[in-house]
Length: 55
Image (tube, rainbow, N blue to C red; front, top):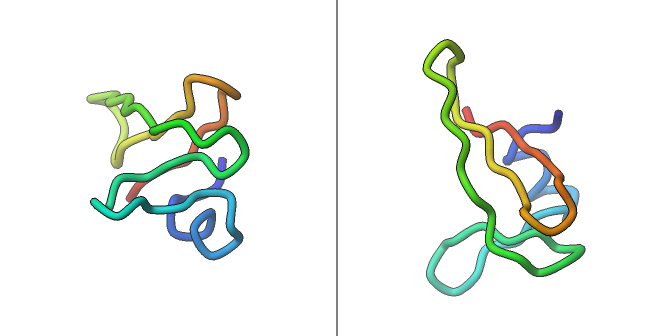
């Protein structure tokens, strides 16, 4: 699983004009998954099931 920062640099994710993260491939807003036992947040695309870890 890539980090959000690396995905932004690689062009897998983009930010819209309001700073929200979007999947570049399907242009969907990312949803958030929070697991209390893990550090960080997992951002996922509901369309293509891609996941990125936000530290």
